[in-house]
Length: 433
Ligand SMILES: O=P(O)(O)OC[C@H]1O[C@](O)(CO)[C@@H](O)[C@@H]1O
Image (cartoon, rainbow, N blue to C red; front, side, top):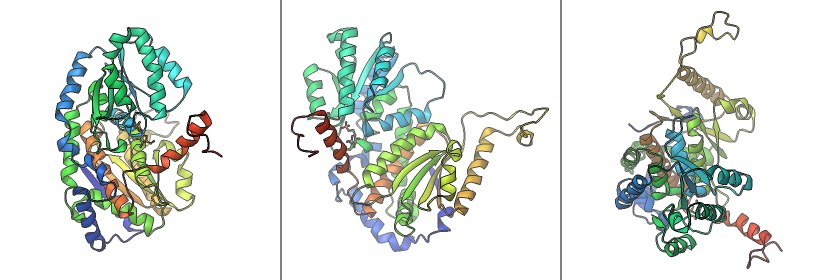
């Protein structure tokens, strides 16, 4: 139970010679596991599937037990402090069903309209806040926290509000750490050695998952399986490295500039958002890296499909296929058959969706768009954990193949500096001159 990788529709465009890269892959594998490469201080996520903080998870579970009647948990965070938990929840959540504790995200943009309506919504709800920020100084979550902290204190009083604010941040430093210590909020840790986009399996993801009632144990088992599967330095036995090398070669030898992650299940839309941060922030530097995009089919076949089929030939697709649906429906027979669907009556939607996937792949490949096919069995917590770790390790390998540091994001500062200057922050006066 893991993942299947099919490169048939890449090999038509590219010769993937594992032998040629065997030595390089082995070296990088050692670099990752011995933590000797660029950005090596941030390789703490490597061991998380087995060495996650077990005491902390127990503390999260007992916090959830104490707060089992909460109607809403507001999770404040952005980027890696947001996308992983949002992706995990969407991955497994049944559409159109209301969880006992609803998880609502905030601080992932600066929209006053969004926050206004959230504040209104929370007025008659029994709620708590989990504010997540490794640095503690990121503007978006800091603004949202300031506003929601005022609201929760007004609603419950300062003393009770303290029991309803859970902070996930650095172990010993930062603005949020200091605030949490001063106010006596319950704290959870983002380890020094784990950067935001690699933090799903820390309290960053685990707290929201536990509050949403997700099976965290099986998620960690999935990640453990991915760890075991990616533990070989022999690329022939390591699908994560095969994926990493393939996308590297499509870029370097086939001149592809864009990788699109494609899904056929709306539950995967936010997984794509998480994936985009992972690869975009890790690889997009020094004028290198693939631009990562995503699409949800068949929806986007009716918008982007035209471009993919016939636009500039600079992209390839990585299709994430789900073999088995939990629930399904069949198409009923109709006596008039005006829509001419009787030829597929009694067929399930999964059957039709799979034919759409196959037909699209054939079309796009014939339009010179290489397709990597990744298949998982189903959309459950186990496979979420598996995919998270699979892509994390693939991303590290891929960035090291490009000879860049996968774990920093210096470019993100540019917009922040300009925004601070425009807002009149002290010390930024000369930035735009
Ligand atoms: O957890 P923090 O420190 O608020 O950072 C949130 C996100 O912002 C970034 O630092 C980019 O500004 C991401 O790398 C990170 O995931």
